[in-house]
Image (cartoon, rainbow over all chains, first blue to last red; front, top):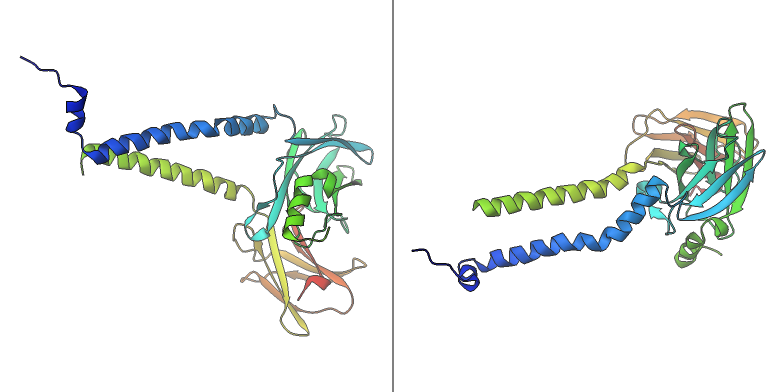
Length: 180
Length: 112
């Protein structure tokens, strides 16, 4: 004759640490669910369904060409190893100039020449990214300079205030005590 | 160790390894050029180049350029990823050039 054991009898045979291990594992299963909204947001951003970046600045004329420019994430600059702090921006070349532009560069401050044009954007013409180094001594009135180099050798530039490109970076600079 | 405990430990170890890989993936995504220059003495300057992931840059170009764009010193980093040169007269800047869009520019006024 078989006898059915009640749940309390079954629990009695399980060591306490195993019961706690079960509870902790349940927490580990539930915990990632809280990060799902951020995860789906990142996925949409990476796929491009949320646009060029979290904060799009619109069309910027660069000589005869134009780019759509965006702050990739509305967050303060990130630590980039020994290179100091960096901030990610994205751009998309205009439809007519996608085949004419060889490279796009971004720099804090006006470049002296094409060789020192700053960090190069990488990616397809429809969404290129750059991790722009933020110099330690940068001031709040600094400008970002976009340089476009054409396959025909022509070089065109445009500037936009850092305060317009990334207000959160200005807040971060102010907290760090950089001159405003 | 019981089989259940062994399985749990293995799962936990895999989860930790996965988490670690995810954390390191961000760090590995970008490696910007890094360059620092300092005065060795009143006459000489030492520049050290590399990348943000900690790798060295032996053989990479480091030019010393006057404000009028004349190249004063056309140097390359040594095996120890450094270059020592005599401080030029007048105003100049140093360009660590690891390729198009991978440059670091240091003005003479920033060298201490």
